[in-house]
Each structure stands twice: as structure tokens, then as C-alpha cells.
Length: 464
Image 1 (tube, rainbow, N blue to C red):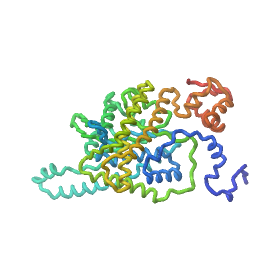
Image 2 (cartoon, rainbow, N blue to C red):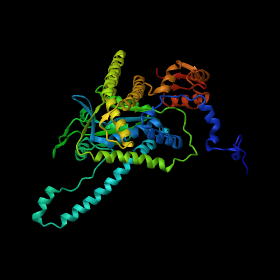
Image 3 (tube, helix red, strand yellow):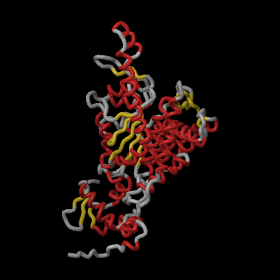
Image 4 (tube, rainbow, N blue to C red):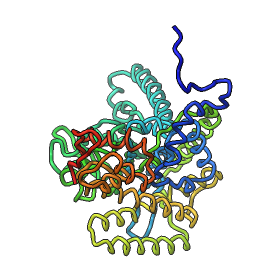
């Protein structure tokens, strides 16, 4: 039996695979709701081109990849270089990053691409460790008992160099940090699992531990069998979260002790679906990216003692001006949460500026001695982006709906009771297409328990 499909496309006239979805793309695209665009121009041009090509071929969010690049770079630089802002104010270039988006937004693949140089380097280091242990065992086996004790005291069993951890207790993390002074990345596919594990056994202790580690403050982990001292710990953290569970990040005291405001948030640039492209990512793109990040790591490993980098004179003046203006703008809100966010972002500017300067110098084959105005301007531009996403998070926390961004804006605009046609008219003002309203948003709100739809074509808000 032959089944005729109405309005099926004539494949002989299709130039691109994307054209097969063209009716849907045109309808959604003409009403596309743009969110906050990630400022990709903060990166050196070569890195920009790599991220743009991957975005265009694989559809990964630019901001998601960018956060991964920053965290990868931060761990590769690690404790080799710190940033001196003023006398008594020296910071490591570590970051705590969160990418926000539903499961359809390809959060994990985007992060995996950006972190691939680090993941690959970790595999190499583990293989090297196996060889070192085999060599150590072979040498140990040749010794007499009289010589063995002295050998073990002088040459204990080799420890693997770690760059990454996943699910780990505070005590285990202290031990791994003490064995890896260069620095670590905690990579959690779902960041909420990490946050929920804090204070699981002793309320308040783990959260304060991560606040101290963020600042590079020395830590002591006291255990029954042994105490572990960690001098200048370096830890970056990155992972994803779905918008509907964002409020859980502020549960307990996390919204009050400053922990939440240490997190940098990246949101998707658009709510429209991402369609597959027929273009392939050129092999050279992966190779170029890996080469850049590998050189960053190798250069950092060659630095025997920690170097303290300072601002140039012009950059120092500009930073003070920006930081003071940021403090003033935060105080104008009269909201302690906003004031805290703006102050924490002031502290992130030097960290980001140092990473941008080192990235630029690595590409040019130069040694970093100072952070110049260009790198600082990039950091300030990125800080403005993170300021906007922080406000999006605050809006979500202040709402009891679990929505964020334009979805929260749209839900808030709906009256207490309304019809489908009214919902469509309100959506037009926010640049949503009728099909997007009927097929996606209203159904989503009903499923989340935000709307009652017991009467066909009529809706009633359940949360205000």
C-alpha cells in the first residue's frame, strides 16, 4: 500500500538539509525571542573563530562552550600565576561556573568539547603514572630489606597528577588538592548534585570550605587517622543545571552566606530549537583548540615558582574606576543580594583579566608579566554579561514559579484567568509566535502546575 504524505518536500529541489525543516524554522525564527547574547569577542580572535565554527556546525551554545574554555584555561594556569590587584589583595584565577538550560540545550556535549584538552591530558597523566609505578616497583624489588626502609622514606610510591575530580567528599578533596598543588577542576554534569552534597553530614562546614578554597585560603582537614593541610588550594568548578531547579541553589543558608554569589551563570541565547546543520566541523578546529590549550598547560608547568602578575598602570586605573562604579550601582538598588553580587563580580574581574592576558600571550608566544588594558576591558565586558545573568537568577529566586528569563516575564504578564487567544496576543508583545504559545509554553506551564486547564481553551493561574 502506498501512503501519500501531504505537503511532503520534493527532495530533488532541496539544496540544504536544513531546508527540510524550513516551514517550522521560518515560523519560529520570525518570532525568535533573544535572551542575553554571550560576548564571544572577549576571547582572542583565534579562539572566537573556533567556538563560532563549532556553534555553527554542532549547534552548541556559544556561552556554554565559553564557560568550559574559561574553566579549562583556569585549571591549566592553576597556581602557576596569581593576580595582584593591590597590596594585600592577590587572587588565583579559579572560577565557579554554572551553565543553565533544559536538557535539549546540549549542555553536556558543549562542556565536553571545551574541556576535551583537559580530559585528554588527564588520560595521558594517568598512563604516565602507571609507568612510574611499574618503574618504582621494579627498583624496589631489587633492594634488600636493610635498604628498603631508606628507599621507601626517600621515594614513596608515586601519586598520579590529577587535573579533574567528580563526585568527591570534602576529606578526599583535601587529600587530592594537597597532592596536586597546581590545581583541579571539579566537573559535575549536574551542579545541583554537588550543591546538595554540601553540609550533608555537618551543617555549614562544607559550604564554608568551598568559600575558603575559592579564595585560595589554606585549609586543614582533620580526620581521626590523619590531618591534611592544603596550602593555597586551587579549585575551579563547572556544571549544568535546569532552570526549573535554580531556586534549590539558594536553599538553606546558601543564599545568605555568599556561596550563591560566587557562581557565574551562563544562560542560552535563544529559546528557539537548534536544528542540525549539514556542515561538518573541520578536524583542524579540534586540533587547533587542543594545541592552544596544551601549550597553555605546558607553559604553566615550566614555571618553577608561583608568579604574581600585576596590572599595567593604565589597567590599574581603569580597574579602580570600574570597580568603584560597580559598587555605586549595586548600592543604588538598596538590596543586599544585588550589592553582594556586584562586589563578588568586582573580585572576578582580575581573575578573568589574568586568564585573557595569558591566553593572548600564549597565542603570541610571549611570557606574561603584566595584565594590560585590552585584557581588562574584555574582563569588564564579560562581567557585565554575568551581571545580567545574576539578575536573571535573582528574578527566578524571587518568583515562586521556578521560571526564569523571558518565560517568567511572559507568565507574569498573563492575567489571573485568560483564554488561548488572549495568551497569544500577550505573547505577540513579547515576540512569541502563536504556535510557540499553544504548543510549547501553555503546555509547559500546565505540566509545571502553574496553570489550570480543566476547561478547554480557558486557563487559570495557580501561582502569582
